[in-house]
Length: 113
Length: 111
Image (cartoon, rainbow over all chains, first blue to last red; front, side):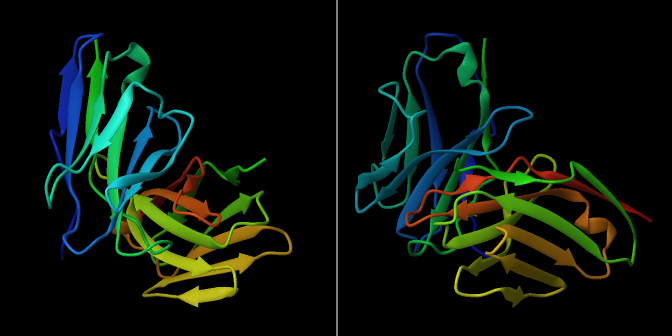
């Protein structure tokens, strides 16, 4: 069964550094998402991406964050000048069409020191 | 508000019994609802979804019920198995792709 894959599984970064989280969505999916889950809290929406542009973003997704689909298979989340409070699990998801099930990867655990 | 919440933090159930997990939502405009299962170290795994024009949908061993009058969603798991032990999240969507998740409900299956 096709699945969303995320790398790395764990990323440790010094505060203030830039980090790029990578995702390979399911190949025939057209909608791509990033969510995060701070330890002990619920999953929060960050951004959705369709047709090579951001379709929606949450209040969390400020100028520190950016997304890119650099080629036909990868979908990346860049966090500039990381802060301690950016430590969380970051999940990538993809969907075939709007309002169909979003399928999630197993996440990247980001630890900011 | 636009919150989705779960009533019970932990549900312990005997293996073979049925499980019911409840979820309340507050946004009457929500038109799509989905249940996910999350095992330790894994991402949310799709279980079943339902649209607002339905009140019941069945899958394999799972049933989702939607009561729009009281803004309530439930997940029923038949003949609960040890592999069903996980955290279960409900999520809602309202007119766009954004999913709003609840806090999660831990299900523990007792062999």
